[in-house]
Amino acid sequence: MTSEIIIMNTDVIALAADSTITINDKKTYNGVNKIFMLSNDPPMGIMVFGLGKFENISIETLIKEYSKKTNFKKLKNIINIKNDFLKYLTEVTQATNINIFLDSHLKNFKQMINQQRNSCNELEFYQFIETFSNAEIFEFLKDIFETEKYNEKFKEIIKEYDESKINLNNLKKCFCSYIFNISTGILIAGFNKEDMFPSYVSFNIIANVNNTLLYQNMDTKLNYSGTLIIPFAQTDVIETYLSGIDANLEDEIKKYFVNIMENYICNMYDHINVEKLEKINEIKNQLTKNFKNNINSLKKDFYSPILESLDFLPREEIGNLAESLIQITSLKRKIDSNLESVGGNIDVALISKGDGFIWKKRNPYFDPKINPQFFDEKMNKNF
Image (cartoon, rainbow, N blue to C red):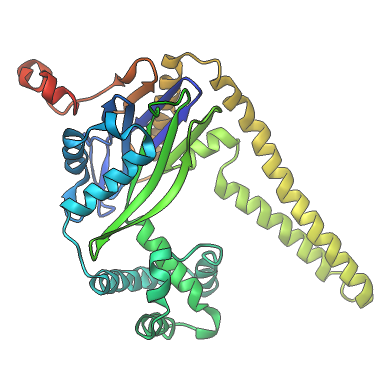
């Protein structure tokens, strides 16, 4: 696990990341690099989160080798760089068969579902599956999921539970979410050659299947003339700071309000006729919707001044803000968790049109004084 962030205004991009890696949710190590310079012409950086390997090759190795061989000046913009990087990953990694890929993950997915069932009561388990109803089935899996073979495989999983309470499509969407969560997240950020404002793209690389790279787009901002703060991986602490309320607390408050309204209606059943009850239900639904909208509006009002201030902060302060938001996540994990899944040294990079890619804070795993060979022009490109 990790905590990472991108902060942007019209002048600069700040990237910050901790240096902790978690092994099997049991042990952590510090000193892992998660931010890398891609190019100074155009100025581009890359940040990684999630699984540290892709097709059994270290993602750090893949990025550094890609950076060495690529003419970024020729590619010019962030979309071309993204597409070229995906092409490179397809060429240098070993492809697997789609059936082997799916069967392997379905086996692990089934174990995850069983663990989820054993960790909660029956109602909570079926509610967990239902939460994926608004998710999407990956485009590259839609056709194969409709084949008889994989329909039957998902139905076999459902048979172990109450079949009337699990929707087949929701289970497939839950599987897609499972794959997404064990993939590698990539963020590329910088300034396109001919743009005055910054850009970024984020996506998750999933697998090289039949020499086709499976990936899922997350978000894109091109030549963006606004301000933004976006956390990645463990986002809860930063989102609480930005919105003024913890997401879990917000959910409980909303549930509490809905329960009050439901109980109010139930207590009126014996005292009013059906026609009035239908009208009261309409009012109840509208009040619930208004209540949720008001909370969202309050969060936006809390968040807006922070974004507005980014327009006036000097570059150094934006870098300090990015570092501080990672630090408070690290502090929270140190206090509230048995596993310090965010921690270690924090790396901070600033990218601007004029100065290019600049390290504000960088923590090498070696002593620079006894490794002067690292700092020659050829090697320095990858530090």
